[in-house]
Image (tube, rainbow, N blue to C red; front, side, top):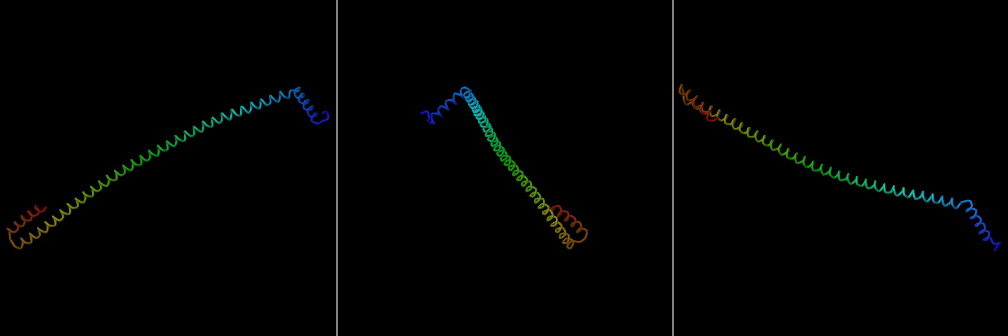
Length: 161
């Protein structure tokens, strides 16, 4: 048993452990492990805090996005209603314009008809006066003819105009 290598490895291990204990290596290793555990715990706490902040920022951005989408929908709805209102007003203005133009055109047509009727009557009166004067001048002679002619022309003009 004394000459076996496992025995000497065990003796060397025990001596090494006693030396480590005397020099305080175990205590230093435990302190280093405690420091490392504290560092890891601090990093985990920071990571948890950052994750919570990121979740808050994400929720804030989602809320802003939803708000922006609602505002965009409201703007689109307002624009559509404004466009419909403008189209309705434009249609009413066009209909009013067409009605006024139609009324003006009908007035001009009526005026032109009245003028044409007056022109026809005037032309008929002139033709009747010429015909009457020609007939009377051929059938009646003298001073009586001139008086009758003047009276007849005056009466025809008054009746036809």
